[in-house]
Image 1: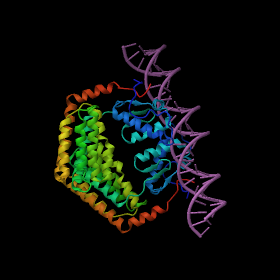
Image 2 (image 1 turned 90 degrees about the vertical axis):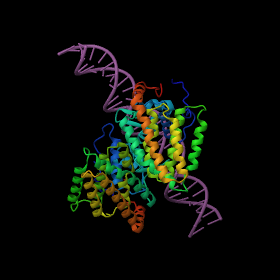
Image 3 (image 1 turned 30 degrees about the horizontal axis):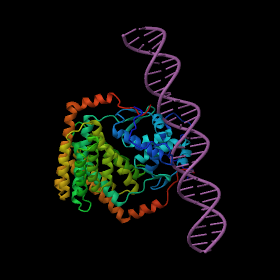
Length: 248
Length: 248
DNA sequence: GGGACAAGAATCCTATAGGAATTGACAAAA
DNA sequence: TTTTGTCAATTCCTATAGGATTCTTGTCCC
């Protein structure tokens, strides 16, 4: 398993410019968590990462602290770092309730503002998704990347950096993706995204708000149904066997 | 200036237990920013802090990275750390728009939930404020502390940790306090708080939501009025002369 | 056979040193 | 008078070492 090329980042061999080691460790660890190479609730040893990246322990510590600020790892003082555990049903409820507070408002704001209207970018994003589906690559990862970009475009167009930052801090797509690696209702998701994009493109504020609300309701319904049926057990089973150690 | 006792934290002389230096540096720096000893947009040199606290530079770096995650300092790579600059009118608008999204919902949720109803705690908080007003101490700081606790109680009672965390990350009270150190409408604030507390205590969800919305509207109106009249100039003038260096 | 204690190993956290880059000033030329 | 080039000082970032704490493993006793 250690010999796997791990297409995450560069091998980091003959480059040690000033002020870059910490950023590299941050990028690599973040990518590893996003790609699922680091299972939820898995220990992260500092010197293992430092040996793997061939850098010292100090930049690794800095990267882990930044990741802790992003709620991607947790640190028990004196016991080291671990990736954040999986979300339970209650936390999933809380996450979607927050999205229900923020995103319908963002959709309405984006639709009302005619200069910053993201309708064209949303349409391009949907076309790109339809084109890339059926090609090579992991379908789940494709869907999550599309979902992140789609909702990120709407939040960006809403024009409120505070709301956007708060939304990004939750990493809702990442958490739901870690919970349910299976494709859940990808077709329905695309349809609902198309409805939202159409309402925004038509500058229909009320329609965009309603479409986004419906989308979040339905999305939570899909996730919760999968969780209570078999998702919870499957996630538990997966978390019991770590998929890949970080090094050695 | 260096001889001022600085009642922020312990002198940190004869204590160096494992795993505490970083936490101490974090607490001291955070308190200094909250108390205004560090002006907005002021440079923070690492070794100055390390000499002042008589610890090494490594825990100071860790504390600064945590503060960066809290949006209290910003770091230019290769150029060091600074406290976050003052908010402009546009950012103040964004901040209050976010509060308008979150807090009325929180007030309604807190009022509807009869078990977690914070009415008694809110009443106690208001009584404590009325009692401490007129006593010694800084009035501004007293008001900000009360405001933070009051809104924090409501967010806590809403029972959504995601929303609560997102709200706390904005540090809205801290930023507005840094913008306007003068007491602005303290009496009106207390009155509006009393209305919110009464509605929540009566389990009146719609009333609590409306009262909170009015409160945020009025609060933004007060701040914006002060900003456009003289606050902006006063804040600019203050930021041009640093109030106190961190050491030496 | 099961449980408890102890020793060893592993790991984390802090301290210190050194290299590299940026900032500011001063002088010279256009 | 303005601009530019060089130099020095300060400061940041990384690397390495050591002390303190926790986890694991082996052995002994009940």
